[in-house]
Image (cartoon, rainbow, N blue to C red; front, side):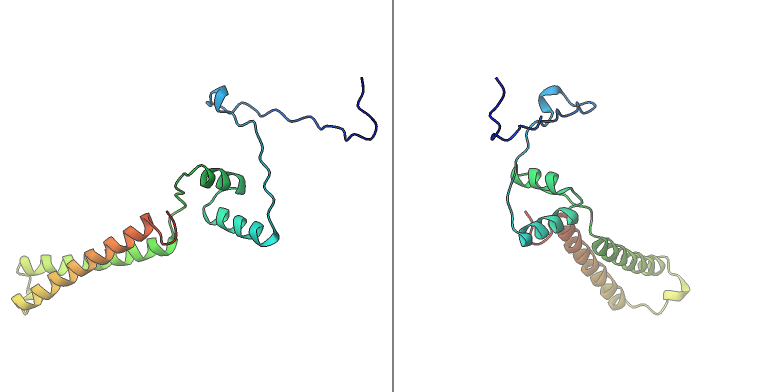
Length: 140
């Protein structure tokens, strides 16, 4: 018996394609709708973009409690490269002093101590930047 004329026609639900290498029980078959206002939509799009994900993937991963591992922050990478360069230069000076190079003949033990302290400080700074990359503020 056909549906009454005032009833809306049901659209056929498209069947998901079997993803290559994914078992049939893992194929996503359900769609959830969430109503949001304009500001929430913009915020979700921005957060998904920041995490280098589609909005759907972002919402699924956050909703299921996954930790988001977004692309590494380029500013943090630049900072790590700068600190690494500083450590390389400081280590080079220490190596010259240990090899009794003529260019470091005027280095006193106190100068070398300051150099070692700067290396330690740079290592501490490197550790802090690495920690920030691994666990950015405001994220879990």
